[in-house]
Length: 109
Image 1 (tube, rainbow, N blue to C red):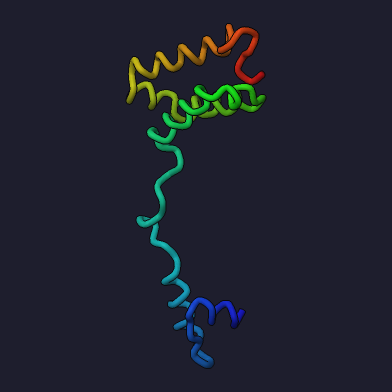
Image 2 (cartoon, rainbow, N blue to C red):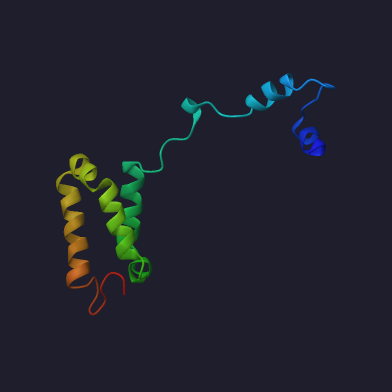
C-alpha cells in the first residue's frame, strides 16, 4: 500500500488522514468530465454498417442477437436521424435474414 502511494507521488503526513483523503478525491473524475455514453448514433451507424458489410461477422451465430439488440436500443432514433437511408439499410437486413446475403447463406449461419 505504501509503495503504491509512493508510486502515485503522494506524500502521507504522519498521523493525519484528512489530507490523504483530499488527495485521493482529487484523482477521481468529475461527472461532467466522464466519457460520453457508449450508445451514440454515429458509432451505431459505423457498427451496423461493419456488421452488415462483413460476411464473416454475418456468419457468426451471435450476429442476429446483436443486430436485434442494436435495433432495440437505437432503431427508432436511427430512423428519425437517417430517414430513408436507414430504411434502405433495414431492407438489406431483411433480405439477408429471409433470402440470404449469398446463395444459401442466411445471417447467423
